[in-house]
Length: 558
Image (cartoon, rainbow, N blue to C red; front, side, top):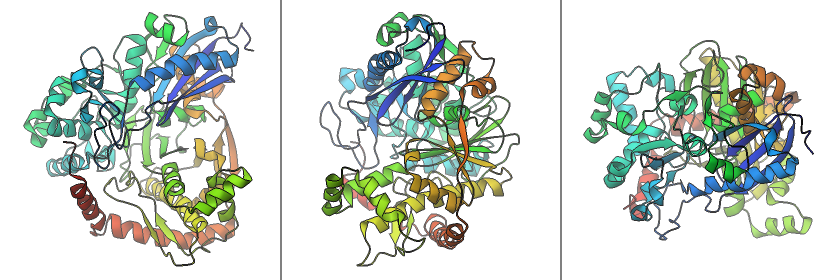
């Protein structure tokens, strides 16, 4: 039962498959109650729910009503779990996956809610892992290189198909009637705050990292017209909006949103944020060199620095993108937990599933246990972790997964361990790239659901040959959102102060084993050879296979 004299804040984390609410004490960050709501529609990657219309490869959509259901169910349930009086709550903060885009009318109504667009895929939310805009991203990158656009190095030299401009250009070119009806192209992080406050405020984080907003401006109309004449007014007509700094008050909770959540009308609602970036202060990572790896379905790596550097293949560097006064860097891997889940669901023989059922454990736990007894390199495999493309450092979602070295004696646990190791190798490529660019990682702090696998964590420590610290909360993004809510409500004077009071981290929980680290150096060298051969070496077999697949599946979204 919460002490009724203590002010509280609520943080809501909107993930890929569910939303989570946590009730947090402002004074010390104690988490008093939590609740989760699974999205009813989940991820739409095969058919539309309204009509059953098939979706092409590389599509990933969502239904925005699922997000509102989180407010209606998870927030009241978390308050009940905390035994808290709603009158104690002084602020609400939210975070979202990015780049997740909602096409709306001028008043924020999602186009997929309009009857005439219920059967149009482009009218739905494009989830972060919607990668079907790769051709548009390729053209953006090529034109930017030709023109020497000054903003391109701020994104490691490549713009991702996951981001706002590539997805927006795809809508224009594949569904011009949807583009014409779209008054606003809104990050879901900002859409949910719009619904909570009645005010549309762009957050500085997604605007900078996913919206190509640097030094107060976006790509020019002349550049956009070079991509497509109809795209020239994209920024002014569809995207541009006042930008709020992280930790600012976006507005007060409306009466409608108060009825959804059970929270008091008028309390402070923080400017929106991204699930990864909001986690850094929750892990106490507010100083240069402290990198946070938020490991779940994908992994996002975020770090603040006191110098501006161009890191090849990074997702972006933004002034104040994580903590005011520092440059916020971002990199990431598009598939991590998703790869493990795919493998278990589609590649593991029935006998393993039966054994797991008999023992009352998950298949993941069984495979981890079997793989844990192996010596480094014993399985004879090397894998590339590109089953959902490569976000960093190659920034190419046409790339695909590889497992090399399989024989007739290869077992399921061998491949599983090789996939775990591949994701660790991918993180090492990112860490090394930052160091080579003059932004060294001095501490790696891990957050996210994959923390529950200690074998995976030890593999990462051995591959990286550095200690791993661990966030002190199981609800990192939601805690981070609550922390920002406390700042927005005026309970703490800034993000650093709130992080000191409400964040938590356990230092050097996993330490590298010298023998394993030496063995992994040999395997990592082989990983790099494959990485460069398929990612940099001009061997475009993966792209050709993607093109063949799209042609066989019938092409676009028509």
